[in-house]
Length: 249
Length: 67
Image 1 (cartoon, rainbow over the protein chains, first blue to last red):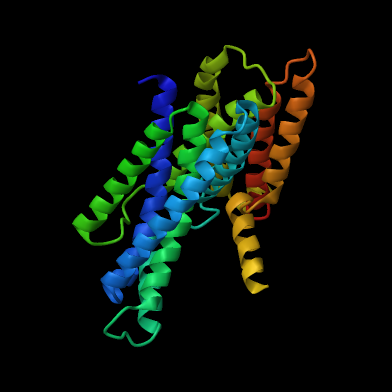
Image 2: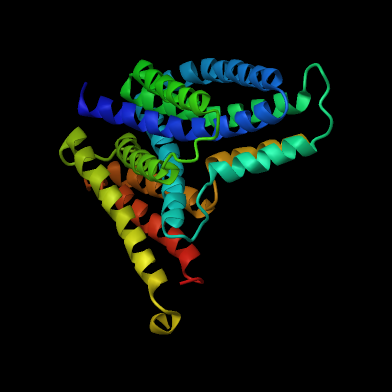
């Protein structure tokens, strides 16, 4: 496996794990409090809808000229990556609350209990919530798999990495039968943000007509540089936040 | 109408996210790279510089009033 393929597989695996953790929390909350059957039908329906989106978008994307594809995908990855990195930095410095899966589970479970009496048959509430949670988180997975895969001409590897991530998260969720509250979600988001931003910079630049010094090897500089810059922001912001207000004024 | 609005809100949230300046900055940087890339000048430095500037600006905008 080449370095680029490893980067692709790792990025897709981490990104999909984060999304799968979020979807699992919602499904577990409605499944345990209302109806497992309806919640699982919701997940199944979401998977069918995601399959249709993939079938429609995949060939359309891969049939674009490579430079147009790289500009479009690079731009989207950059926007996504910078948003993930921004959130991860703000969470790491305490400027934004950490994403708490246990709290989300409690809120969703509470809302599910408050949603009214549960009949004996199909439960539309469980279905809708599970469908929405799985579909919306799944859309990001599909986007990442198609864009990363199409750019590297290896959609198969991206799809395998995504499937492994979803299986690992669902397996862990089934084993402990509770939301995965101990997953270091912010650290994973930080890592994914760095990878998306780095690949977005590289592909976007190449597609727009820039020639990177060293060609593909420049990724070996772009990725650590992005990571170090993001970490430097965290360190400086933490130090500033720790200083008393009078010193800062 | 409500459905169209909620779809538009979803697409906006999905693509643009919390800070629209990031999306605008990325589009401008890609355009500049394409413009300069079409000349004899080097254009590879535009995106890394923009990424650094956008990330720092976006994060420090949130941090400024509180720190």
